[in-house]
Image 1 (cartoon, rainbow, N blue to C red):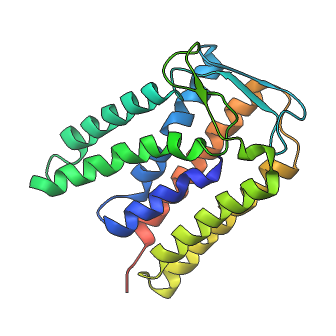
Image 2: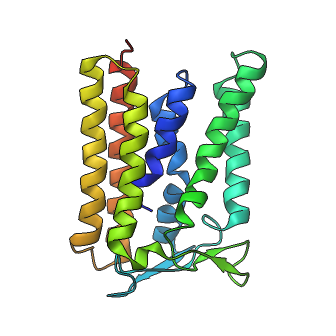
Length: 221
């Protein structure tokens, strides 16, 4: 999955308005921040194989430290503890727990949303363990419908609570996310993994920047 990973950010923002988009956008892409960084450092690996799937040429053959089920759970717990113990330390009682759990689940949602789209490249724990993935990327139009549908539904449900000006800002973001998904499928990717890693990190940071902007501009009805 590509920009569909941002869906849980809108869902949790809808139910827990105290959460900031800046933090939510970071959490939902946390595993990809790790993977791209690990790949650039040579810790995890992928290769570009033309025609590997209908949707993209990514052979994600070694990523046990960021995208295995065990790793996703570990990083989710770590993020939960970070937010519960530090970021939300001034919140009280159950609300503090709920906010921390939401952040932790946003991290874990990355694995859950990758599962239907990836080929069998998501390990249970180590690279030699069983690998999971239902392979929707092999059917590009179905994958696009699935991912963009989730984006549009989650944004629509969230935007109902906003005033007109704020709706425009959120709808603009959803349009960008959908266009990016089409671009990932129909436009050529960089040929080297270094370019892919750097461009992906730049994109994540840019979207986090817009999330920071939204946190200061969003107004409710």
